[in-house]
Image (cartoon, rainbow, N blue to C red; front, side, top):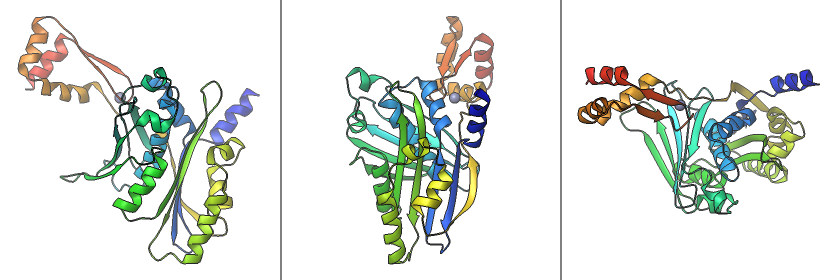
Length: 300
Ligand SMILES: [Zn+2]
């Protein structure tokens, strides 16, 4: 039995698919991010509603990042809001690597708040595209809906003028464990014919729910082919594995420690203090002792 379970897991490995309808008028993205979201939630030890908020943001970032051109490009989704979670941030690249955090884990639940919108509160959603240029591209929308998916839909229409439909789902069982996490995104290219638009609209309207379908064993490929782009002959162009991944290192944070300045570093040395940094994204702890601090001071 265990063997079968494992085999199934390999088949349903986290991945994103992207492609286009045969008539080249509708782009689609779909992601199975179940293990990725599980890992993020495990790292930060989140429960509801934080787990759902981070999960949805991770899924969205994966789909928005996959279009980036260079390996170094990054897309960041940042929520700044007045709700108990105190904001959140996720970042991804074109290779399906994603990571993120919520600012105040556990704060919403401790206040008895379970709704996503209430946990987020009022604020803004900012999309930052760092394409290695002097200035990143920044687009901001007010969080009107508080579901993240609808707020992003609004962002695409307002800031990028791309009619977009987004679905983000995190399915949690009665014990708070992630059962499924995934999403899809459909974008209309300019000059999409009216009849095609109404066809895809009808498909999406009549589609039950992504994570419920995934839970019944439907793959994201099948969901796109048989439901979302039904009768539109979708062609998958790319399949990219997806993972929760943090590229932090002791050296990288040491560069950040230089910003503390000579005085503060020397003071730590004198007092025999160790400097400690915890990565926001992966919770890994880095400790800088005397030798490390001396090394940093030498480079100043
Ligand atoms: Zn890290």
